[in-house]
Image 1 (cartoon, helix red, strand yellow):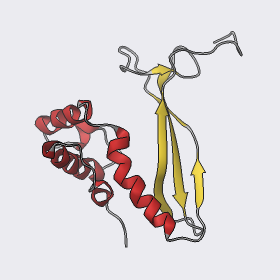
Image 2 (cartoon, rainbow, N blue to C red):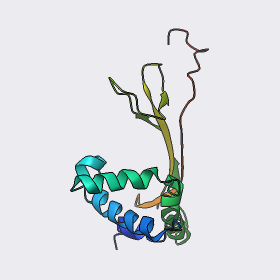
Image 3 (cartoon, rainbow, N blue to C red):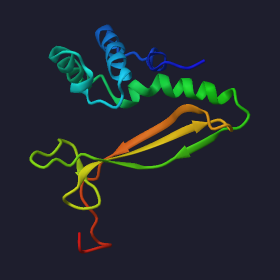
Length: 151
């Protein structure tokens, strides 16, 4: 039986019922069209602003949001005799021509700015994804040019 995105984060608690309800709404909006940005996926300007306020709230973090999903993934893993845990690092290029994204750091050159995402995905032996078991993100503070002075 397919697992819904809402089910994966249902146990998330921020210590504020308004934030818990907002997560359900955001998951519904973004889950319908995960390829869209927040402004494109939300139906009104008020919903878009509410989503940005939610993500800017100090009680909200990626790991807090994903904790229920991690737990559900580990539960699915425990029901299998053998699983593959696959990892890879993806660079998220946030370079903008006129205004840089706050918090973005140098990538492979000083001109390219962004962050790095490193998930640990679980799969059963048939290749069925069981979910994400863990993840981390990081941003460089500076570019190490000691290997190639041309950058």
